[in-house]
Length: 127
Image 1: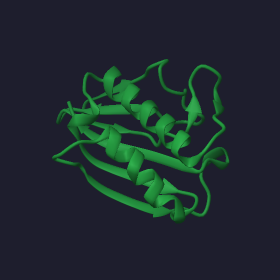
Image 2: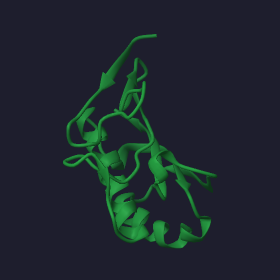
Image 3: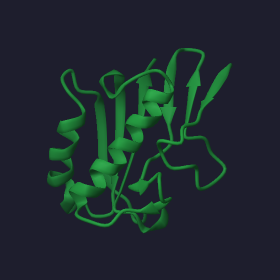
Image 4: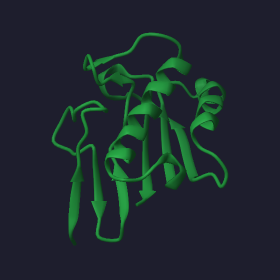
């Protein structure tokens, strides 16, 4: 398998031994989970769950753009929430970033997310 690593300064640097994204020979981009880190400061943002969701989706979008694709070409997303009670609020933000035909999606509560984040999102895109 041939793969190309995607790296952009417009999304937070990896905080471990992983890539922001990887494009496979099949022209699919697989992203790492994005939490609401401001790439300019390297710190989690403050604010509401909606603010945090916006930042996470902006980070995801930056990685997609660096790989030569857009959120419109997402085929699968996964949303991890520290509190599933935030699902409705996050869903309303999600709908501002993804349009019909919507990608397949899973969303669930996780016991804990990196750096104590409230939300993490990952996606698979067509290039």
